[in-house]
Amino acid sequence: MQFVTSRLEALDKLNKFLENDITNYNSKRNFDFGVTNRRNVSCLSPYICHRLITEYETAKLVLKKYPFQKVDKFIQEIFWRVYWKGWLELRPKVWTDFIEDLKSIQDDENYLKAVNGETEIECFNDWVKELKKFNYLHNHTRMLFASIWIFTLKLPWQKGAEFFMKHLYDGDAASNTLSWRWVAGIQTKGKNYLAKSWNISKFTNNKYKDIKLNENALPLIDKREYKLNSLNLNYENISNENLLVFENELNLENQKLKTYENIYLVLLSNEVRQLKLEPKVLNYKSEISNDQKKRFNQIQLINEDKLHTLLEKTKSFDVIHPSIGENYSYLNNMKKKHDLKLNFIIREEDKFSWQFSNKGYFNFKNNIPKILTSFNLQ
Image 1 (cartoon, one colour):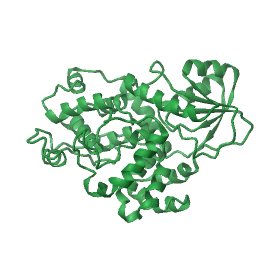
Image 2 (tube, rainbow, N blue to C red; image 1 turned 60 degrees about the horizontal axis):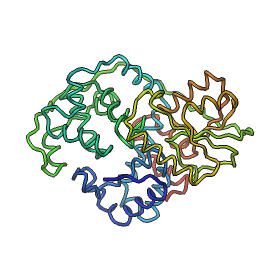
Image 3 (cartoon, rainbow, N blue to C red; image 1 turned 180 degrees about the vertical axis):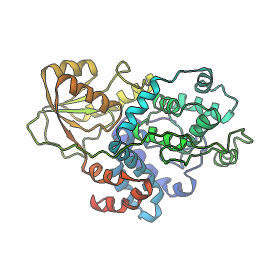
Image 4 (spheres, rainbow, N blue to C red; image 1 turned 135 degrees about the horizontal axis):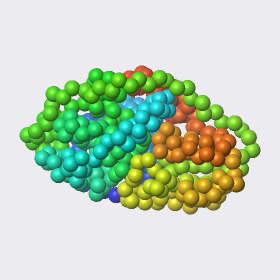
């Protein structure tokens, strides 16, 4: 299983999925048939995660070919990413608390056995090796993995979320962190997700059987409450000639942007990241960033050292909003340190969609038709 590194290749993958396989998605999407047979899912998440292609253009291409009723599950899965992103935007302290929690958790012997695939649970060990080799896991398998990690191996959910972010090509601060919280039972308080032996057997086509799991575990308890923040990311149309972009917001084609003299595309190294990434993951980010450079002459790829040098001379930038997570935290620190004036540019589709992230996904799902209609996506 290989992932491509250019926008054109990603669009080609999407189009082939629409032509050949999407009609099986509704009935087959929860099955993990192994790395050699992923035709029941799209495997587009690494590209959508970095917005090499966006959720919205993906939905538009799908609905151009099929009626909503025939592909509703696929559209809903695409919009889970939008929902999670909006949910975290409205509650940014969830991310900062997650990062702070990690600082006080020690890597004990049970943790080391888990991340090295040396537990007594065969499927879990296989998934660890698959994640490390291919930097991807099937979405349903991720839920099963997280449940085993939390409730059978009794490891901190924060360390599991960190482990995924470290290895996944599609590691996303919102989707990853909040999905782990959901499995643990603290995202939707009192409602956890429990992996069960029959479930794993069924959805791996009977590859694994008679798995010894804790199938009656209670949800975790986290008494912290998070109030809704307002979105204060207004774009002020002043005469900045410089644009900052981070590697998780690569799509400039679908942005209504003026012409910039300089576009600085920032890829942070592990030296300044709060969550350290595997070299393969950083290299993947570098390759897809280089694809953008080929298509926009004014783009310069820079790391944090070159960014520091730039910030000594230039104090005012337009910024494609990188969303709550690693890049936004770093940028916010730089803003305070260098007294920067930043005009955040936020996609109109995001701004509109995120207002529906104030409650649970059921409420958001009911508003998907409104989102689709508002931006002529169907």
